[in-house]
Length: 246
Image 1 (cartoon, one colour):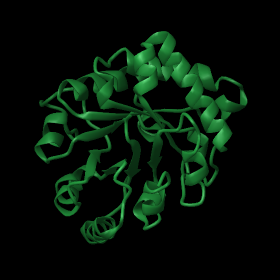
Image 2 (image 1 turned 45 degrees about the vertical axis):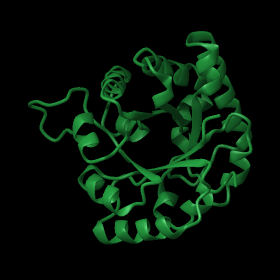
Image 3 (image 1 turned 30 degrees about the horizontal axis):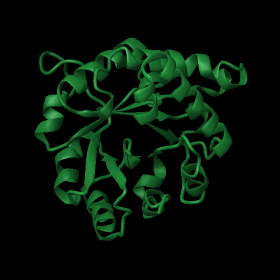
């Protein structure tokens, strides 16, 4: 069985002082050893976060580019990420898609390159509010998932993060039933379009205003294999979320 997976996405937050304080809090905490924990730090602090966190807590970059090096001002590559001792990257986050205009195709290319270079990928998908209200949630997330799946050879290195965009940072959380329903549909899609073995083994995690208050009931859902946590990952309550299955 794969471990329950809890990622913290720090987004554009933190400085050396606050990262050191958060690292000290997490390092001293009693964390469920059956949960895999990954902290997504801003790229400029990847090295620093890696040096401050205990080895049982992994670090993720929040994005990367689709090639190893070259004339791509402002980008970072999987090779550079690995050189900092970091093992994961978050790709396709809704803020990358909707604020920075990243296409499904580009995200797929990034996924392929990151995996070829030995990084684990937290691949994000999710519908916007108008899409949910129009009843096309499945259509949207299946299309996004297809661009990811077409670029994956080894699924053991991929975690799929379902984050309904309307629930990110809004305080609105999908109900446990809403989350379970989409996770179940995603697993069925994987069964039909990838393989039954992958559908059964891939971790599908939920993101969107996960808090200490909402995490236990969400974690109890059959097809929720963990969380991608935004704002709460910067606070001590992240420990409660890590221990949601304890």
